[in-house]
Image (cartoon, rainbow, N blue to C red):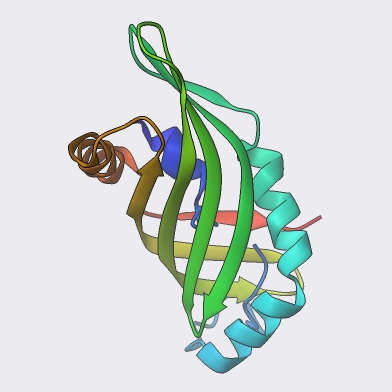
Length: 159
């Protein structure tokens, strides 16, 4: 799988926003994870729209016979500074029937800027791949490959 799969989830991307309360961009300030969770929950719909705007409907070539389509990001959840993303995907195959399922990712929120409506993350990784018509070993391989190519960090801007 490619980084697009994870980017789609980016949080994880997934997700991978707008949640830091930096009073001045020049000042580094430690994140209040309880506040990140509250703001992440409060702005969940906007964050979900921002992530879907970047990744929903995108198709990424895995190899000559397989393509991964990110249908949509279904959920973005916060547990303190930890962000989890669940995406609905379709694995398009030329030889076998298409597989449908979910990919789950998580990342750590590193900054949240409400003034700029921007959320940034790092330590992104795929935690679970669940596809129909695919053996467990295939899912483990897709997860392994996705974690190799997944962008480790990124930012989302809310509209």
